[in-house]
Length: 187
Image (cartoon, rainbow, N blue to C red; front, side, top):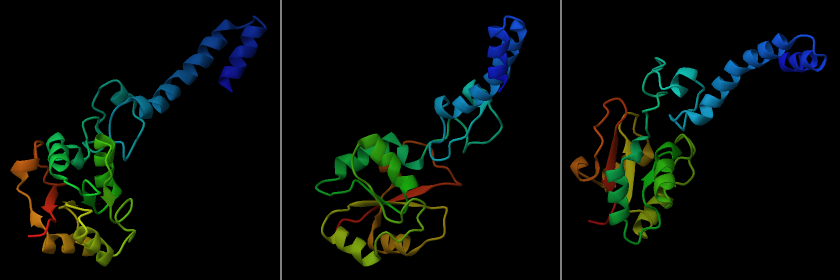
């Protein structure tokens, strides 16, 4: 509305300051809205922040900061999974898309999100997953260590072998949001 008023004033050649005022009124909201697109940060929880766009700490903490990365974006983990995938259809299985999506994006290879987007959708039964593992479609599973174990987690922990983090982790562990990698190959 302010922009239209400014254009109308300029058109009539009466008040050029109205144009400057209209543009000024729109500049800050436009920059803030565009910050969600151009400021790097949490892709699973995007938010607008003019300070973050300018590279200033906006006090929102690590989850919304520009340095927050998904737990499965560790380059050593991705290399480990790709090197040892073998003939498996999926690079890794995860309880939710938040852990599987970064693997898909970074490697271009399929990853299985067992429980849908947030892990609450029973996309497949434990039996169907067990058969996929038997057929060799899944070799590795990554689990979040900061949530209450569900059926999928318990099955993976019971049937899989915990992989030593020294083999696949290059980023420092985060106590509040950790992951564990399990090898599901037959023993």
